[in-house]
Length: 391
Ligand code: GLA
Image 1 (cartoon, protein in one colour):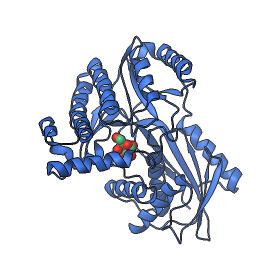
Image 2: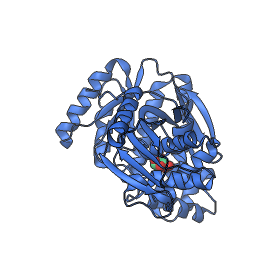
Image 3: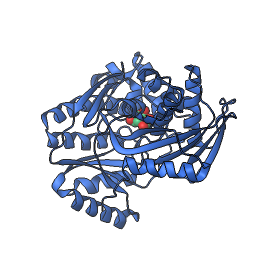
């Protein structure tokens, strides 16, 4: 059965109540950021390539009550039932907890932009599954960024905000990510995918009126840990390939150039990047023409490329995609995001949504021994502060 996400208003209510229960205070500040599903273009962003993500109706909410004194931030995560504290006077040393580093990194980057973070008690509630490849980290970063801007009444340009969050992830959390997640999580338009050219950050909204088609997300249950994974290794391989080809990035490389590379594994990495960039443009065109069969076929081709050439899938994700593609009413499926676990996104005929979800869950449980979380997503708006009561 399809899992229903708690609505944004109920997440907010949950976070507000927790702030009252844990800290005895009513929050004055609220901010929200969505997760994302990438429809096409994975592992292309850090190659100055193209991507086609949507922000989804799964959210991270942060609420905060300001304290009058002290230089500490207390942060309570409802999902983890865990509290951390951060010294605002010493943000340089990465916190032992990984999730705290995203917050710490954003605050440190905002300090550099001249935005001061006051002592606060913060509660986080989220319906974005952590480690699912749906940008739970970018959602946390952008929610904190908008919260800081609301509290300080200092709005920064979206490019500075995105850069601060990307830097937080790279410097503090140690993930050498590209710019896709933070850009779409911040700037997405409801009802639209975002065709993003990562070479110049040019973001074009692509109207995504799915009519009788739906997007189903299924979590393989394998949690990806990008910091420890081969993500950095893949990035390094692309840099090596670019160096061998005498170019600064893989953006302008064409399929014929691959023959110039001596290493067969570098050939495969480059082939993925070149073909995936082309698929992004084809997928955006298919969406514009409402050619859902075409979009589905491109998604399934993309999965094969991520699996065979880029080698960032895993057995469980591959099986999920195979099971999905064998279902009547499925137009295509692929892993989404960084890979090594996390979620698959499946394009389905809306009429078959419940049947397909139930059958996939059953098949996956039977074969892998785990009942996967399964939910339907729609293209949602980017991150924002929700309101700011005058303090
Ligand atoms: C992670 C990174 C992104 C991008 C994807 C793969 O989500 O944060 O920058 O590289 O993996 O497309």
